[in-house]
Image (tube, rainbow over all chains, first blue to last red; front, side, top):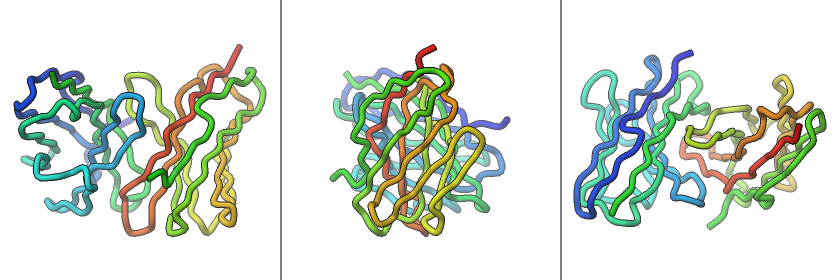
Length: 114
Length: 112
């Protein structure tokens, strides 16, 4: 069964550094998302992306964040100048155009900012 | 701003019995709801969904009930199995947006 994959599984970075989290959505999916879950808290929506554009974003998704689909398979989340509070599990998800309501999640990248 | 609430952080059920997980929401604009299951170190896995035009949706051992007037939904798992032990999240959205608002999760433990 096809699944969303994410790399790396864990990332440790120093405060102020830039990180890029990578996702490979399911191949026939065209809508992509990033969510995050700070330890002990709920899963929070960050951004949705379709047709090379951001469709929606939350108030968390400020200028520090950007998303890109650099090629036909990858979907990336860049965090510029990371802060301690960016430490979280970041989940990528994707969905088919015919069934946008059902989002399939990747295993997540655990980001730790020191 | 807790638009989606799961008031029970944990639930223990004997194998073979029914598990009932509850979720309340405050935003009357929500019209699509999903349940996800999450194991440690994995991403959420889609379980079942329901649109606001329905009050029940069933898929195998999983049934979701929606009570719009009470702004309440529940997930029933019958019979519960040890492999069902996980954290269950409900999520809600407004049609036309795909920004899901998640609850805080309920940790289900099914005892053998």
